[in-house]
Length: 120
Image (cartoon, rainbow, N blue to C red; front, side, top):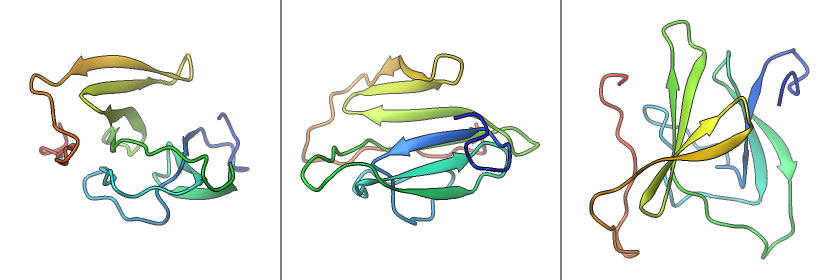
């Protein structure tokens, strides 16, 4: 959302949110979710709480999200793992596009996520 944060900063909104969890390398664990929404400031890199977006029982479990930042700190790419598929967020169209599919299907009983490799 352009300028939705009240300070003219572009934001990336996550519906379902991840509470106030601190990420490691920009990766959010896949077992944390709640019914509110959070907004990531694309320049500040800070999360802002939006509030409840739906009632209890309507929430959907979201996959892990990885955020890639440029040297100046601006978020350049956002990826999400949904099952065996990796999606890239397209800022221009405000939607997700399928980037890749994992070579090995991950059983639902196993956890899978992103790992930060020296900022790459």
